[in-house]
Length: 425
Image 1 (cartoon, rainbow, N blue to C red):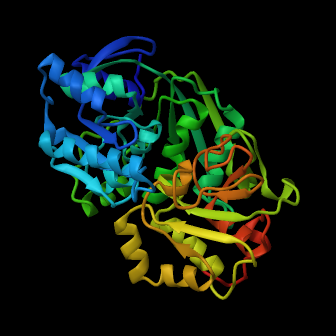
Image 2: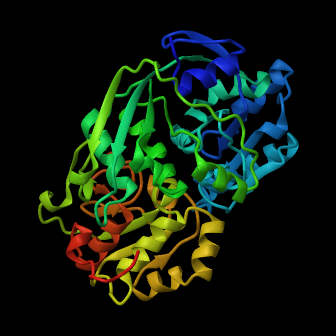
């Protein structure tokens, strides 16, 4: 019986010829990522000392302060300070601060390669599957074991094959595709399973768009999301000076729990309505929803491709009176590239406020939290109650193009409504 991509990677990590879905295996970890919110904690440091343990391989550990940077209060500042000092004490060379959300930095700085097993203290660690890795989020206690031993036990997940064929319709982005997938699967439809993305639609996507898709696999309950490594992947790895790793592909006779086929030709701009990511509908059917804030950023929707698309739509336009359009580039690198190419200028001239590269408003701890009764349309990954501030606020998730269009009209808007013919993405 053949194996899926995820099964092959876990088999290699376990030192076995083969594994099957449902088996529990001990695997060697190729990389561990810790962020400031759930990574280095005082209790973890104390337990490592109590065990008399040292970090198994500091070169394979990456620590990123992103959720609480820039700190909004003394408590956040103390957490970042502890994270910084702990990393220095433990000789973690790959420590990043004020550089952007962890998932973008991991791929930009060559910390992920095809065929690797990467674990991180953030549920959206599944993002790295865009590069053909098996990556998944774990808790702080699980990370303690990884730091001490370099190993973790995992149950081999079943895989769901997600197939998309054909060219995306005009003004439809990767965010719309993954929202369509989550809308069909439901928020528990892929629980502890792998989403394996295949087909010509995904193959045509740049890495920026693949990262968006893999990032949100967990919103369907998935253990991981994964793309085949192809020429696009290898070109990107070369750009960020990352070795090609050990790419794998699924066998022709691999077993899947189900296959989900998306009719790309019928896709249109979508949104997730409050307060669940799987509450998906076409924006044109969402009704007249006035907004107070529009947000483009985070590890899901703040990459170069996203900001470039938003700037293309906004050139020559102004955001509606009373609307806050906040832009948080996905990393310092993205920020600088967009600045050089005039993208940030175009966004600012339309009325946007450019923020630091950080997690920021995505989790409502600084840089754009919403108040009671306010509505935000966002290119981020979650719209749970209280996610971006007040529990009485409402969040709609949509593509960067849809967010930009909504900022222009002051209400939830399909980008096709405001796009000018002849404009180029």
